[in-house]
Image: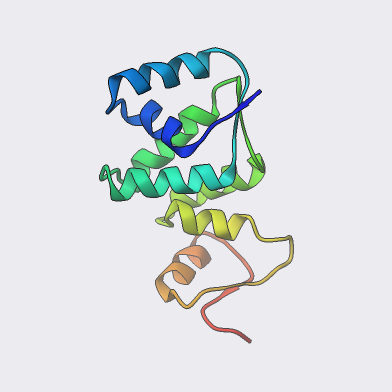
Length: 131
């Protein structure tokens, strides 16, 4: 199994550097690949801030990538839940923070807009201020 870094995912998903893009495609074709949640978080940030990807494009890219038979992500259930939350207007990073909390833990954020979107998405135990 090979664990990959953010720059490998970015080259794979953007193809902006042909030699590294080809190397990334070859790597992904060579066998089992493991991706840490932190790598997904950073990749999402790079795709959005450096390449101008919209949240939907990031979700679609990650969904396709994680749908490959040889690709495994750390905490796959949290990643899947986060991707689902992005369909409700929640940015991937916020969705990952939310979906990675321990069961039963209340999530607190000062970002009222995020809290409202999460509540509309059906997320329980979230508030915009500490109790």
